[in-house]
Length: 190
Image (cartoon, rainbow, N blue to C red; front, top):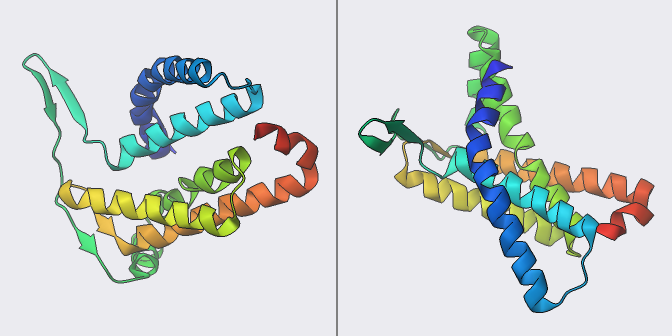
């Protein structure tokens, strides 16, 4: 649980810096377009953008370290690339059942699924798009992250792409289930 908290705390500075910038830009855009203000849509859009910034901070934005001499980009670890699909299942089995390292399952397996669920949820909540487009957007977003990670000291993994896309699909499923129960409320977000 402390590892999850660490990731959340690492996201917070990026998200906090983004909040006022997003709000200012959004107000200017609404005034220029003279668009009708929809509180539901604006709050949903705000949360989605803040989530995306948090996601980017943990996947593609280099880590910075501040010191007396200024700041440096933190480079730790080696870049590894996995192009073997479903290798994560074997690795998870080894780490959890053989080595007893449950955090591997939580962060690498569940984390990759859960972190993309908001993409599958927020996109159809805020805009009218087909299920297929939502899944394609989730897949392409994950592919973009994996390609960006080729130049970073983070791993590039085909399993991340698979798990992230699965997360998008689960987020979409959650949206569809909630839409059936709360349709009159959910359509206010568009």
